[in-house]
Image (cartoon, rainbow over all chains, first blue to last red; front, top):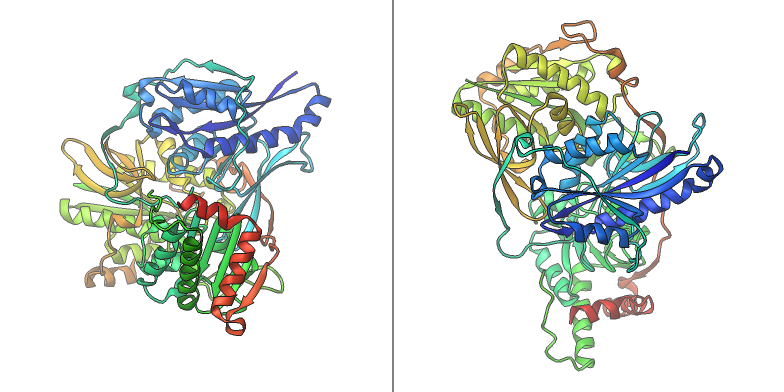
Length: 357
Length: 279
């Protein structure tokens, strides 16, 4: 009997888990279930495991069990107080060599992307970046199901399904918000296994001298519930002022398509799309974006999409729940007016407590 | 003397890529090839330090012979030496095989002429993987900082570099010993205008061509398709989602269009949740 291990990297900073870790556990559980039948027939066992590095992060290991891990390998040491490439990748290389996972997923965050390429190279295995679909599927010539990792290529114009036939683990990185958050089980069964840490401060070859926290408002569009996004059709950078008003009225944030970033109209923290962020808000209002695939792949998982464009044939309407053919400079003021009227009708007079980020 | 090595890649300008609606194939004709923009900014930073400290900049690229154009562009910007690693056997390389060829090449250059800093762009705009820079660092055993927006200090005597790296949370200021590998954001440097002598030199510049037959000995099993653990299983156009309803504001009027839109959002239970959250 062999054990087929399905791994998710549990990302944390300063003792806070990144929610993408739970999204990964949700995906990896589904992948594990797709091979369960085949494994049982062969007398094999399938387990879902998390790997967590950090210092004083036992509470996060516990949380990983709640989100679906059968087992969490915990590597707790002061050398992991802050993320650094070398101590992290060397440690993951070591634990992966010890336990030999079949599949290993890492979040495609700044930290995860820094890490994943290093781990995959150290393990001499294949890594597919920014996957949007993951399945365990049958492939001719392979006795076991393989990970079919689908990702957008060429700026989102093509979907390519990649597989890694021989080398293990089969690795993929997955962006935050591409997959849904799984249910949290408050009474999990799994176990936490503390692993010995062999990497030392000398191995790190780097020292973090300071952290500069951003001044003023920082925007986090990734986990926003409402996004009001604009594109080239705004015509000017000032157009974002109007979008901001609508975002404020809805308690949301402002997003943008790539041409606006390239034109310098707004900072790249606001960018939605293949080369920006993937988002999954409850409401996505998009104005003046024609709908290049580059943008669509970043926002099509939103719960409800309202598109505004003067061109009735704009591709953005293909992904919208409701499309308004019209001038955004007329439509958005009308939206603001009707939202204000609703507020008043609800008698919530002083409804000026906007949610701040 | 400072020696920087910059890895550059030629990419199709992805902002111009279109799909043939009939065949679903990629239309490559007429798509201009450019130097990967992140690489260009990394190169600009390397050249800026060369001008400040004295020394030289070597560029390396792996790709087909037409990548010569990109190397010439680097010379035009102020690079001193260009190496194009090119062989049909390298075709079909994934990021693992690519990092092997680049690491071997850079290591060979380093042994003959020690390198202080290896620069990469943070990613290439055609693949967007951001995997090759970290891969080369691992293979060469170099310390790495990714997503660099600024080099604060580059001290050749004390053999250290201090770089700023931007993450979702903050900017990290990191100190590394030299030699080190950096992957760079566009903010790291503006692309300068090429001085006339560099421009003239670039027109006649022929980069060194390194192939499977020399000067380096590459392991056949680690290059190209053979050295690539991943393969493309299939390609397709993204599935078309179901389109929703379209309301023409020019017909029904703007106020009515908005009213109907909000009614739809209400019916989906969206607006109440959202407005509830906003207060």
